[in-house]
Amino acid sequence: MPFLLKEVFDGSIRFMQQSHYYQLDAQKSLFASIVSFCKLEALQFATAANHFALKYKLVVKANIAAMAELTDLRKKTLAA
Image (cartoon, rainbow, N blue to C red; front, side, top):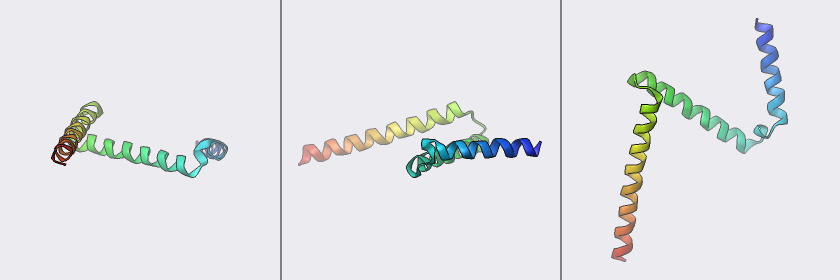
């Protein structure tokens, strides 16, 4: 079994070296997405909520923050 896993791992490394993911910027974005997925999974275990509920909470908080920023910009624009 370990030999089979090594073959799959080596094959995926060869594929990554040939693909566009091997480029540095793409690797950074891939790494960031993996880290964010792991953080979401850790939150899922800590809060005992499913990932849809956690995503919904994050989206709602992001929308609230964006609306607050928009109202601040509007106030600054009207004051100037």
